[in-house]
Length: 403
Ligand code: HEM
Image (cartoon, rainbow, N blue to C red; front, top):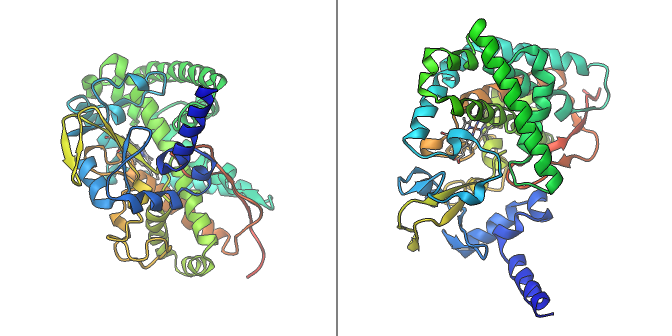
């Protein structure tokens, strides 16, 4: 009985804690009021679940850029069992060494050269939607497109592509935390299957190199990467490459279709697509938060953060900081400083794939609007599980024949 009373007290406590509530249904449906709750409590807030948290743009940026904070702590054992994401979860010098290997493939110049391949993937997928009315925007374009692109960039053979996408999705579904023992089993099987697919690809590319990531990895260029680091590195690029861009495409189209004036303007002037994508990155970003471990005692916004403590930087909340963005809750194509968002993080872990993600989204959204200027929402959208990654699993749209 006493234990139950305590549990109820803890429950009531948690229900008042916006960071804890992010993990509940309301955080998945609409986290933005919870971010405003955090903001009303101050620039850096201690949560009842132990972590510090912030939606303050300046504070988040400071923490993400500070050498006193790292993507992993000295005793990050509690992360054991969750997917291991290579240099995303490392500190220098290992982080620097592995990131340096990945960078050339994702530089703006390399990515721009890949535009015709991306366009080809998009056109092929859109060709297949022609007979369908209505169709699911996620299943027919937003999800398969980044998978097709990253499979090619990595250099995984076509024969393995479907299996690869399936296991990659299972792995990605664990990013927001495991939901059950069954889920943990699925994750383990997915990890093993991905290992097998990558190891086959290493073999194939040693025999028959191309100009993809895996070919670079198995050549002398990849000598800075230790053998046991190769599979986690490829897994990071795979997951980062397709669990995020899918949501940028869906979130952009949803934002435009629910702001019909913005849709009409973009349909009339395709040069506005870039503004629409940038404003979606600010207003409804695919990656809602990240976290840092204090590597040393630090004073942040007047608070003492002790070595080993965790700070959750709520990136999507920082993107609505009224000190940086006027009328932050408004989706505004003309916002002059929209690219000051933290959707791709900040500091040494700033998203390696940002140029690729932007280009993929531009090509997908531009091509979709050019083909279907009368597109409209054709039924209820389904949100994905969890509140770390924000996006849709189902987005029924109609091509509509209204002019
Ligand atoms: C890191 C967001 C697409 C590869 C990150 C981080 C964020 C992010 C927020 C930093 C996390 C942190 O600071 O802890 C996004 C979003 C994307 C996207 C919103 C799409 C809209 C991509 C793509 C790739 C990619 C297409 C390419 C494969 C990476 C990698 C890192 C990273 C490798 C780790 C960087 C590091 O730790 O140094 N991404 N990403 N991302 N992203 Fe992306």
